[in-house]
Image (cartoon, rainbow, N blue to C red; front, side, top):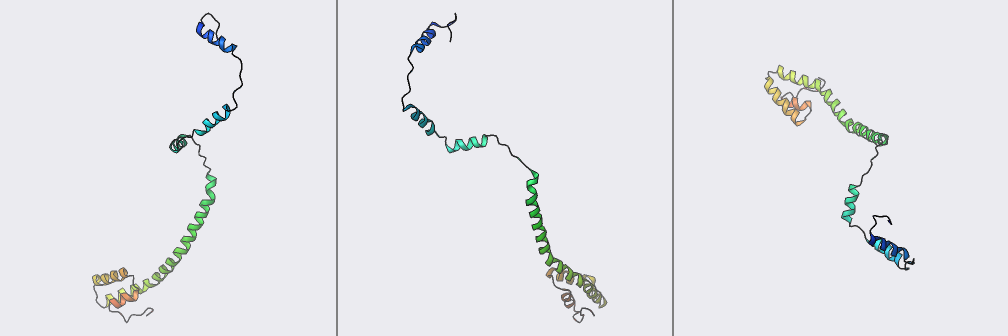
Length: 149
């Protein structure tokens, strides 16, 4: 506050008048009314959501926290693969046992004078139907051929 040479005379009079005023205690209702007014103002949900998105956040990532879930997921995948492929493995073994029979059927059809094209057409039809080897023999007219003979 200035009493210096550049002080405005109006400002100096206002300051002097304020200094001479007596100190008064505030009324008892002042504090509750001010606090009520402050508490009553609440931002709309849209503004609060917007402010929440704009506020900076830090994200911490610890790779070691992923070890237990990855381990459980690996065990589940291995168990699923073991049980799911177990049935397919048995099917593959059964098909592998039929391969020598397939060779015998094709050789017998060749010996009876069938053309390779006819044999291939019948074999593709049997493969398409997923039929066993004895179906190929029956379709080629070799029903007298038995496994193991």
